[in-house]
Every structure is written in C-alpha cells, then in structure tokens.
Length: 397
Image (cartoon, rainbow, N blue to C red; front, side, top):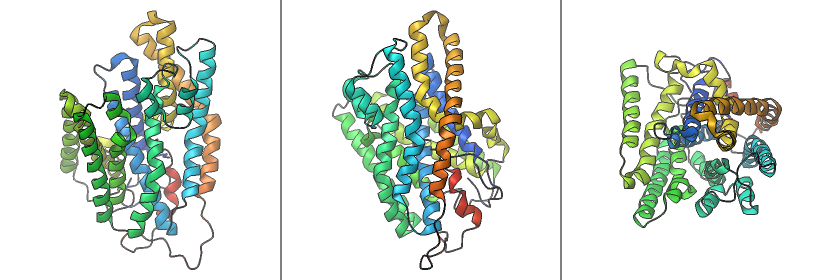
C-alpha cells in the first residue's frame, strides 16, 4: 500500500509509509470550492455549483467517520465531548469572524442587505438552512446564504456520533453498511414523498432531513471499504479508469437530465454514489498518474483554506457586483478570487493554525488503562503506530 500525503481535518492507503497527510483530498476540496465559486460568479449555466456542495458533504462524512474509526481502534471508545470541542474549534472561529466582518461592512453600506436578529442568530447557531428556506434569503446580507450547508453538516454532527458509537461497538462492517444504507434509502424516500406533495425546491435542496444522505454515503464508505484503514485491492489501471469513467459519466448524466422530478429527488443520491468511489480512488491510488494531479501544490493549498474561501467568496462576489457592475464577469471573478484568497490566508495564519494547535491537544492520547484493550483493526490485528497516530491529519472536513 502506498501512503498518500495530505493535510486533512467541512471539510487514503494500503501500507502507510509516510505519516501525516492526504493531499489528494485537499485537491478534491479545491475542485469542489472552485465549482461553487464559479457558479456564484455567474457561470451557473455551465458550472454545477450544487455538485461542489455535494462533494463537500460526501467528503465530510468520509473524513469524520475515518477519524471516529481511528479513535475507536486506538482506545476502544469515542470521546464525544472532545469530538464536539474539536468541531467547535475548527468551524466556529472563522464563521464568527466572517459574520462579524460582514455585519460591519453591512452597517457601512459596503455590502448589500443587513442582518435581522433572526438572520444573525440563524447564521451563528446553525439553523441557517431552515431560516433560508422560510425567509428566502431575506434578513441576511448578500452572499451569507451559503451558511445553509454548514447547518446541514452541523445537524449531522449532532446525531451521527451517537450512531457511530453503536456501530463501532458492534464492529461489523456489513452491519454498518446495512444500517447506513437503510438511512440513505429512508431519506431518499422522504425526499420523493415531499417532492410529490409539493415541497419547495429550496426545502428539498437545503433541509437537513432531505440532504443528509450525501453525508451518510461518505460515512458508509468509511465504515465498509475505507482505503485508509482497510485492505485495498491490488492496482489495476484498466479497472480503476473504468470505475472513474463510469462515475464521471453518471455525474454527467445527473446534470444533463433536466426533468424537475429527477433533479429534486434522485439526483443527489446518484451524484453522491458517483462521488464516493472517486474519493476512494483519489486516496487509494493517489500516487498513480490519473490521480497524482490532485496533489498539485496550488490545489492542496486551496483545499487547505477551502472553508474560509467557501464562507467569504459569495459575500465578496456580491459586494463587487453591487458596487462595480462595470467590472464585468471576468474582472469580478479575478478580483473576487484575489480578495477571497487574501482573506483565507489571513484566516489560516492567525486563526486556523492557532486553533489547530488546540485541536491537536485534544487528540493526544491519555495514559493507557491496563484494563483497556489495545488498538486493533477489524480483523484483530494490532494497529501499526502510524495507524494509531495519523488521526490528527484528518481534521479538516
């Protein structure tokens, strides 16, 4: 097994040889945030921004569940208070700063619109998706509506760890796959029922109860066939390329089918099912030519700052379009990308890195209880030191 290097935390191999990182996943994050950025920048007629959000959902589920499996293998338990504290330290500081900065800019009339009390609370306390559905983006400055997807993930983080405790205690991949697949089918059925009974497109596309299946598909892959923790089949370029081509074709078909009923129901499921194998290959075959480009330096960097880019980019785009409409599409995109990356780099240096130090402390191992079982994999084999300690590299879903 080749190890893959990447720096991971919204938001990997067969025999690990280099501790530390999975850059291919940061490359995937970079592609996802680019889809969202260019769609919001006026290219939505050709760039599927919603697909970028779905990629983030699947990747988040995969990474969070991988962290949980590692922790459970190392200690026999999940420290849920530490998990929630790590999520808080990862997600809340950038969100607070972006929201506070936007509120100030709004008061100075530098961005269009303003927070109402409800809008502000929805953004800060992760019910922005249901608020946006009810208020149709009113009560939020232009560009802040992206918080809807953060709410979906945070709601998921509230309930999934409890399910993971049970599944990891049972310790049978087939059971985990069955349970998580059943949850996905239930959400798909619920989405179909709502669509056939006239639910709005906003509700079907942004509510936690209609979108959590994308995250669950990532969780299922992490539990059942995880390229970081489980055996990876021998490499076959022909087979791998065939799988990748099939997944890309499925994604293309999901975008080309314009039937409204399909778009509101089955599209999210099919896209998520196509994205999961691509993530698997990007991790398991990161050293091979078809996937090595995901480790390009700029893509890895962009993936590492993708959370702040996602939070800030639409606000910047909307402000530029409001104040300087004559810039045109290309000018707006170039200036917005530059400003957004400057904001993201400042956030990385002065906010995210100090918070990452605190998160790493939460990952430090406690003294081993002599009555506690040692770390083993699902087959009863003792985990190598890399496998026990590598969890800190998976902290950026």
